[in-house]
Length: 419
Image 1 (tube, rainbow, N blue to C red):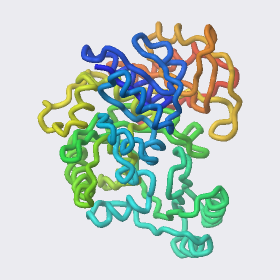
Image 2: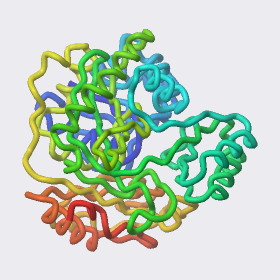
Image 3: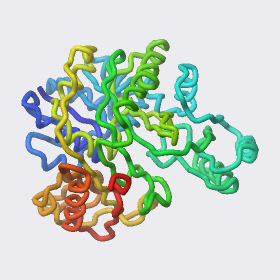
Image 4: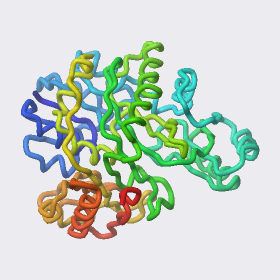
């Protein structure tokens, strides 16, 4: 079969890399792809942007593509699945109305509240003064969120009332007319990526992301500076609760609204000190960088899982198979990220890092042969698999030392909770 992956980040490189491991996948295309996908055997980058639905559809029809896998949330929120399905193209990824589970936090919170799913209490505001009055009433710490898509950076965990009120002004001045203010849940975060065909739900290995830019989980939020899997905090007992108390009720609530949700349900959870899972947010796609930590451990062919979702027969598949071990992904970022940063820096040492035992997933890179250049804030996701977390962490950081580009930055404590 032939597969087209839409997107240009580390997640899309990891998806393509995993799909090409299947004996059933003869070729992959990525649009627009990156420097890493350009270097994969049996993979070709295409020139179409993720919002160029017409050209993507035309290419799929002309080249008899069997499956389209949509990586990023923006094209899903803008209706790429709806568009392609008009031409009877098989797409892994929810329709526009289903993608609201990520593109509108207020819509998602109402859906979950109506379904009786445990969430952080909060309110939605269009008026800054009303939001600030609510913050004064509730006190701090408190969380301020942009209602719609913000590339993983629209969440501010404010430690003081003043910081929270400034965050309201900052988001609204940036153009977010609708914001959510909610309680600051305490505990440990865990990411549960689940696949669904709209009826059945199958969870992947639990992962834990590191959102903050700085060591010790300090500084502003990013799209993610590293991840590891499987996260020990997500015990089999907790995963069973997540399945029955969160994921299955969510799919049922979507179905009751007439939404046949096919794709990834990514539940960002807080596990409270009492051991109870509560939903912080939902995403409508694979996580980044969690995907880069989870997929290296997946033994079941990825194309079989995705096609079963698209064809509505996920329940027929046997249990997912996983390789033994632990995986750790460390993100190498451009100097200045998550703020402004320069592009076009020469990257060296990837071949050496892979010889030392890592898989290097490209996120913000471009190939100008023979040079590989930086082309984004998060540049690389370096993943190592070991028999346990200590082995994986030791290997990944030895590999990080081999890679270099001017201004390179990465956290030195990814996986600190499992050491």
